[in-house]
Image 1 (cartoon, rainbow, N blue to C red):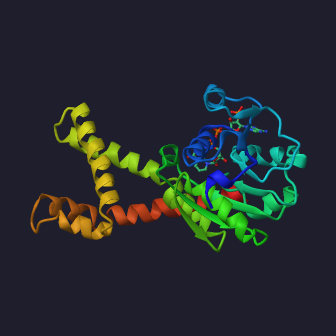
Image 2: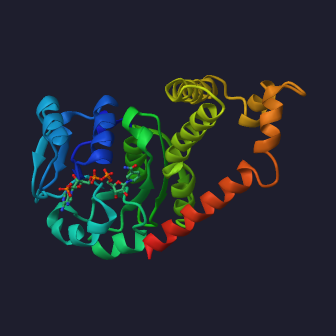
Image 3: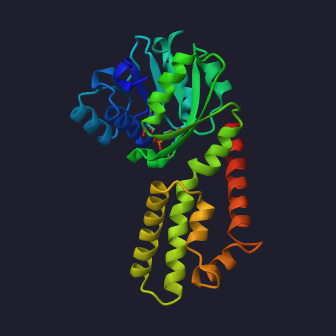
Amino acid sequence: MSLTDIDGVVLVGAGRMGLALARGWLNAGLRPEALTLCDPAPQDAATAFADEEGVVLTPVPPREAARVVVLAVKPQVMASVLPTLGTLIGPHTLVVSIAAGIALASLLDGLATHRVVRAMPNTPAQIGQGMTGAVAAPGVSSEDLEVAEALLAAAGALLWFDEESRIDLVTAVSGSGPAYVFYLVETLAAAGAAEGLAPEDAMKLARQTVIGAAALMDEDMTDAATLRQNVTSPNGTTAAALAVLMAPDGLAALMKKAVAAARKRAEELGR
Ligand SMILES: NC(=O)c1ccc[n+]([C@@H]2O[C@H](COP(=O)([O-])OP(=O)(O)OC[C@H]3O[C@@H](n4cnc5c(N)ncnc54)[C@H](OP(=O)(O)O)[C@@H]3O)[C@@H](O)[C@H]2O)c1
């Protein structure tokens, strides 16, 4: 399904992630008149977006039932937002929530529809390079799935899961993942500076290395391990560094602990 065929999309919460999605939808062909932004206290960015793109921005949820409602408010306010949606959610409305940690069961409890998709995007969605994991409630029709897919894929890659418990793992790997990569840049730069580089030079080297390596991976679908082996000459400099990183107490062990901690926190937030 193409976004040009979809009408009646209401975005509740025109914050950072909501607006990133909305930009992606318009870029992917959603007509501005098919989109309504709903936010009681919109940031300047939301007002500017609505003005520039000719999209309606309203402080209160429209009364007419929408075809799709995308919930992009903070998880902490979700319980107070659901009861305000009223007639915006009809029996034929598909609801897509991107709120971290809010389970399908609580969304189904608080909404007048069984058609609910829970999704977890990440921040590169802002530039159409996101990674989203999603799960659908049993009441979601195949047409709903196509609609959800068209909306979520506008933010980048999309992976569907059958089990909702996987979404906490999506959060731990790709949802929080961009921050791990940013931290990798910080630590690589700090290590370069500790060895004697000027901090700004070290940061430039580290940052562009991650940008370049990511772009290379994007061009070449070879798996990451092979790409790594391809740049590791036996007994060379990369091999010397990797011997440290790949030691039993090295990066793999640390990353395992980090992802487990993120997953545990996601589970706690969802309770
Ligand atoms: N940012 C990410 O990397 C990321 C990744 C995956 C998922 N998410 C999820 O995306 C959701 C939004 O995150 P965000 O970073 O975009 O947060 P955000 O920038 O705070 O955006 C949320 C927006 O919703 C507005 N809002 C509050 N109450 C509302 C209501 N009753 N009706 C309509 N809008 C309302 C907020 O207004 P005020 O500012 O006035 O409160 C704000 O503009 C969260 O649930 C988060 O878990 C975010």
